[in-house]
Length: 464
Ligand SMILES: Cc1cc2nc3c(=O)[nH]c(=O)nc-3n(C[C@H](O)[C@H](O)[C@H](O)COP(=O)(O)OP(=O)(O)OC[C@H]3O[C@@H](n4cnc5c(N)ncnc54)[C@H](O)[C@@H]3O)c2cc1C
Image 1 (cartoon, rainbow, N blue to C red):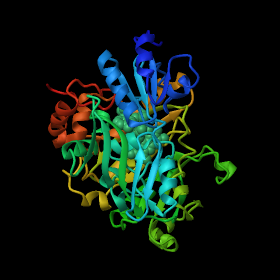
Image 2 (cartoon, protein in one colour):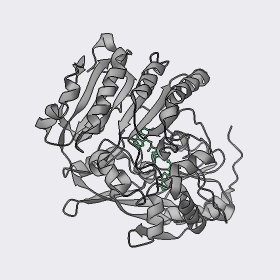
Image 3 (cartoon, rainbow, N blue to C red):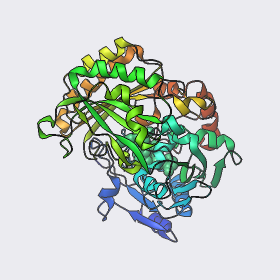
Image 4 (cartoon, helix red, strand yellow):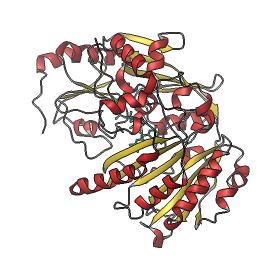
């Protein structure tokens, strides 16, 4: 149920004066679309949604909320699984109008507004044969993903998204607008690279771009599910020595009802290997020979535009479903862990649930551990149990299944998690995810947001 609005009309008129953008109250056209987030489990009703059209409007909204002690949520792409973009009774700052993108092909840089989606940024950069590590589903916001560190198919080649972040324009809790980069407010710049939405609202991101594609070798290989343990073991061994150009993951999924999948396979549990090879496309089959030699039942790999690789799992990740996730980092994947994973997932209870086994390494490991805020850079593997189902009456049993799978492989996990895949898992888990960096994160929070104005996020509590 929505809480009673706490903002009177006179106050709203005051905000509206000179405000570039839109103000939406319950019942207004566009209010329901704006409050809706990816995870259908989240159904919250803010008292006010502001959609600023420029940085000054974001700053005005922040000051307005601070003066009235309103609970503020910030919406980039709305993909946070715990639904941090929206609250009941608070004020949502929805950045969807801030999606301007400027690519400088000569300098190989891009500046993108805080409400941009990955599909938009990929399209704009690929028009010049350039890219930065980006989200694996086009509708994900660049903001939340980048601020959490940013994992994508290109990460072994280019590092995480934050490893390619050059600067940001930030609206602080005070309403002041500052720049953050290696030379301007470098402490803030460090905290933004992995610290989530804790330090301010990023209205512009600047990225370093790299030559990628436009054609790469990509697609998916499909193996029968009973071969899952054997193929994941082979994939692990293959990835241990693979060059940085080899990206992708192993995925325990049910074959989607897509045209490219033969009808009898629709809904069947399978083991997929997702392929993104950024060397010469014609060298792709040779690069993946050890996996192709395992004789998949379907081989859908081919030279394809990088933007199409970025859509490979889009069909399986549509908004409007219930989502519950667990994810952990692994220093290694011993045979016993793989066996445990395969056994725990023999009978998936939702055809939409996916378990992604993602290799790390490559460029990620060449960046120093202290360069950015995350606390687990040295991990070798990342396993994401992405529970998704249609019917909310099944929530309890589906959540239990996701937890059972995560628990089955927990003995091999290391402490801490990837911020972007965390649900609301408590303070301790957030602390562990920053590891040795947490104290520094806390000091930054004390400096930049001492009242915890930005608290609907994976929160770092100020200690002042
Ligand atoms: C279908 C799907 C696919 C995904 N794929 C990937 C993937 O490939 N790689 C990966 O790393 N993650 C992935 N994620 C996770 C994703 O990165 C996080 O959910 C991230 O928070 C999404 O960012 P958003 O802007 O869309 O989210 P939102 O829900 O809008 O925001 C998430 C958090 O970021 C804060 N925030 C948003 N915008 C700003 C801003 N401009 N300034 C300051 N704070 C802000 C919000 O307050 C909130 O706390 C995926 C999620 C989904 C649902």
